[in-house]
Length: 422
Length: 207
Image (cartoon, rainbow over all chains, first blue to last red; front, side, top):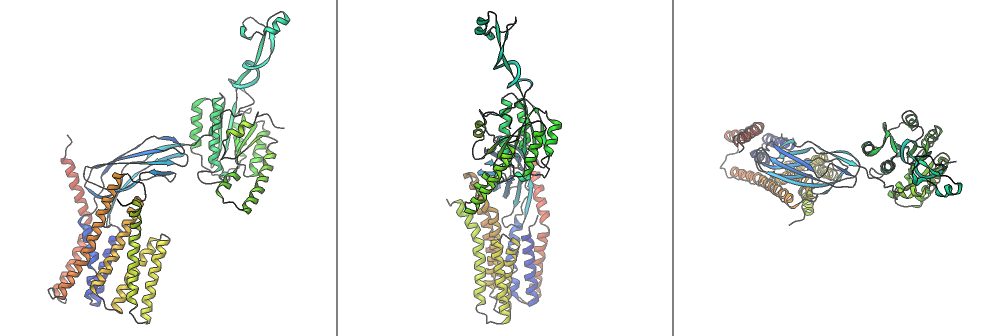
């Protein structure tokens, strides 16, 4: 395939010849010779069609944000010798090159094998494709090129980072009829003392209350509160309004980290967890137990990108129709508008326990702006507005105002119990 | 071993240096022209071309940059045809440098980004080898263009090849037709190369 330079050189040759002949100026005719020399030298070795086979290997195909992946490319020239072969292994912009290069120019003799490696780091969660590998054979004077695509893309899944929530006070208040770790208001197998009753044959000997038995002259057994499990529904606000910050550090990305941490913590406590994500589509995962449920939630969270203009009230509609009523709803939202307040009131009005984890958009924005007296004043005004909103919300829900630069476990640990507000 | 960053900087700077040299050369030649309307027209066109080159470099507008270079070359040739004597050797040198600047720009766009990354020693060696091959070809083409044309001019001036003759005109026309045929048969040459390499592959049966 000829390049525009080749056409330009032909044009220059023709113009010089015709001008020279028209003006009867032999020096002008002479000026046609340099472009012809370039064309002649370029045509002596036209670029061969690249017939290259390649394999791409990733050191791992699943990792978390901030991890590193080594990409290894092995190429073999199955065709004619390639004097100048340009290789480009296409990378999405979210993958940053750490070491080596995905773009090279090499020469490959016929049958020669070449190997190269490079390292990348993902900045953002998501499903990515490394590749395809594009090759271009060109001649030294840039007069001709031959393109090809050699290796198809290789999939790479990048999971979000997770907030570690050990010893956090977060769990449902109301329980379901399954065994778990939450103290229920029913007698059963548990560790919280409930009361004493007369001994019945078959009671565990270790449950006999010897003090009461000695005082009253007959055997009495202790009773305990049953430990059961409950439901937690995580609602993640990923609307366009919530994407305050940069591409890699914004309230939605921080919310995804928190959602994953909450899901892991709740499932580890033997409770059920479900997920609703409000973004350009309204997406949900029904509640379930176990490790598989964590992976289901992770797969949904990987694809979360801020967007959409759906009213936040639609979340209440989905909650009331597809999720159990006695669940704890954990809303993760930066609370950037009044719609969040109305949605929370609506959810609480339907009988749900509501807890809000709110990554502060003010703290996120403040990190990226240079300090000035005007910005400090604006920050104080916005801070007061936010505190007013949170105070209104505390009448119907537990609220954690979270600075994302600190671990989420700290403010959650300070909350002793999730008792019903008001 | 030269640092890769120095190589990348040199690849970026070389075409800019050549274009600045060509513009300064043209401007220097135009200083000898008395201030007439047509001279001012040429000077204005030269300054416009130079400004377009600067704009194209500053704001990454390749088409503006190329148009600016074409204007500078046309100013030189046009000025020397109409107002100044056209020295063939100087004109050939000017045009060869202009073609060299274009080739170096293409080379820089291909190789400079690669040299800015962290290459391992083997890859770096291969890239430098490919760059050296390209630079050698460009130098050979420039030498062929300049000295081939100069030799032709010498032959014409010495009378070895009579300029104003039907034979010379026929020879020039044949040369033009040969170049056009060569360009037209380029795809056929490529197909033959590919067929030959596939036949070689068939002959080399695996063990």
